[in-house]
Image (cartoon, rainbow, N blue to C red):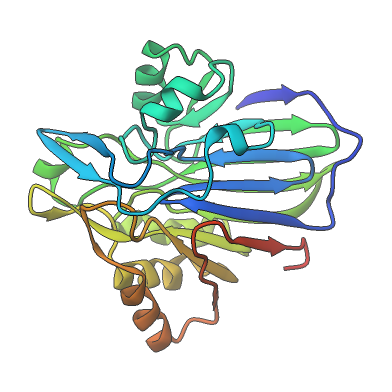
Length: 279
């Protein structure tokens, strides 16, 4: 298992943490003195990203902030290398020395852009990150952009990620990020291996690619919650780009009909969810 040691801090807060929703799959997660940026995409509303195979997507919603507005970042957790998850702004403005945890495919492509501190993880592999008294164990979770093998061959590999936060060996908070996955059978392995998930960040949107759906619709996202069983779930990645066909209302409708014991929380761009180790 790989490990990473970061410069510690004497002001780490273990009483509460927060998830700040910037837009699309971009969030800022802060807990125990650790600051983690996910899937950095900061293009402005009206600008376009290239998704490959001649497909472009227009950004429909302005991100809540820009990179210059962020606090110092400890590391980046990236689902995969696609223009709506790591865009030209991130490539140009993020510190090239930032550790980035992602797929082997993404780490290789980011290396060509000058990001040399990549940590590639295959499914179920982990990276232990330590900073002061805090540790976060980042484990790659199963994920696939499609259940159609022909479509899958045209798309990048995808990771979900599990973030296990602890303090001096004491487990405090477990956070699951689905990544851009569909409802694949392997999702059922997650609660068996990692029960008691405190928070799930659920990538939805019903993204279309060459007439195929390659991210979960709102209904699928709720099904993923029912499978993985987080205590709280927050849908993200639901309305930012023109290729999304299943918005937040679809998720809300499915959540209202769900029998899951999960608490559903909804964030608009720029809003923050605050959590405590006790839930």
